[in-house]
Length: 190
Picture 1 (cartoon, helix red, strand yellow):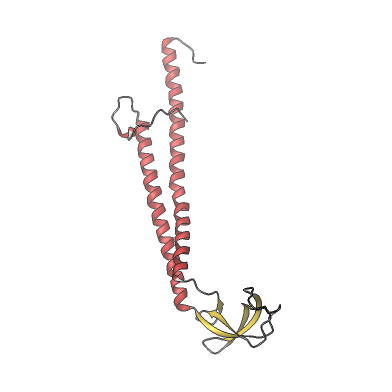
Picture 2 (cartoon, helix red, strand yellow; picture 1 turned 90 degrees about the vertical axis):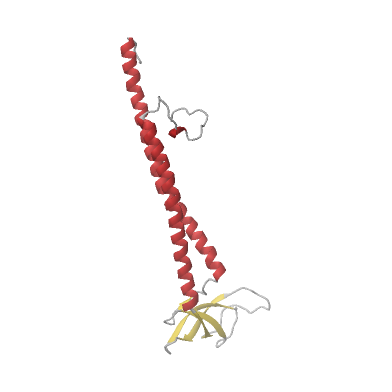
């Protein structure tokens, strides 16, 4: 990169007899890259967050808790105030009356036939407990932020790449112009 002096506000847009065409092109590249970076990042983040929030809201509406029963004794020993959970086989009846079975987290040592709550979708398949509205907002914000930053990197990187190319081209031109100038003066640049 070339040496850059103290920053002057909007220097790329000022009139200057020494301003080259490449300076104007670089100014437009910088403006376009930053505009696209902000615009793409915000739109992608907003779209991703909205999509996640809609999916999680649909899950809260469609998924229902169902009473299931342990089909066998849960492994482990039951303790009085343990928050520990173990996997055990659970059976439940779907909305169409069909029998279903699956694994669920239960209190250790629970007896066969103990009632446990399992969450199911419309077809009676076991699903996880849906996210609350507050949890959905947090998840949507995180996914939206990540998507926005990820998408915003593309125009920013493209702008940096174009600026690098313009800088290399400018330095090559300077080399040619200095060689011509020295040739006119009768000196060697080497």
